[in-house]
Image (tube, rainbow, N blue to C red; front, side):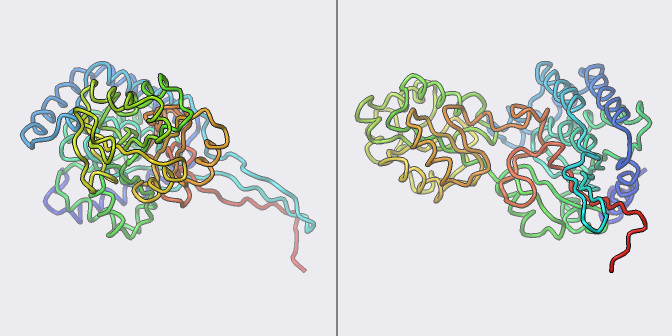
Length: 421
């Protein structure tokens, strides 16, 4: 039985076992990893009643904590969402195995043949908040990429994550892979997070997945390298040439489909020329859908809007709320996004090719979209099967982080008794 009181000893034990498991997992066959993922998917379906029951405990805990409606939606699991977890596990299983892929190969005049091949990172620490499906997504992607993983879920999803983790372990067991390849920190104690951030001898990279508070803490305190998944302050800019019907539909989907995900639109920018020609049709559609629109300037005169405060721009609401303002052309939109964005996902709705090209060229967010909802900012929608997060930094991985992004590379050099003169 693990000593849950001695957090440093607990985490050191988890880390040592993860390191050992990673060394075996690094050369596990594609077939065994595939079998483990399918076994985990089968276990999730067979245990769905247990998972939903565990989720009920978490939902009660979340309500007692006063979580918002949007946050409770992130936490909630039902049979449809469990099917989504299963689909994600199977999709990752079907993805091409990145380990051992030859990225480049060349011959030197010296007689050497050099190959650069993909190799696992080693041990990945994933720290996430309320979404229990991250347990399955992160576990699956790390397994697929040959990495051991230490999962530290949020206190709200403690029981749900535990039930899903048990299914992942069942998959490992069925494929005769090391059970320590996917471990879940068995305590809500926040001291476990602090320990993970300094476990340089065991963990090769930390992936924080959550709000600004969590990511900021990790970036400040981590001694382990970090793939930052910062808040999703996503913008949609409606250009002068935008098709009005398309603009309404895309903006509504971007804001209201699921308000609690990082790809939800948080700020609407409307070109003055579009507004002059079509009026406040986009804002009115949001209001009709039940969105609280915090508007600046001329838009604040639209009946039903709330006058925006300065802090409403650059804010991740994760709720049926968005900021809105009029801008004078694409350059003004770009400047606003540079000032208030989080380098996550931005969209332009436009029929003007040069304007779209300028938007794509001059913004540096991880994902830029044209005439498509920001809610597509998702590894599954990018064909990655699932994602471990959306990396907003610029080192190694950017945007949706799938199995391929969880690898590094090594050089394999072949000679024939080759000597350096």
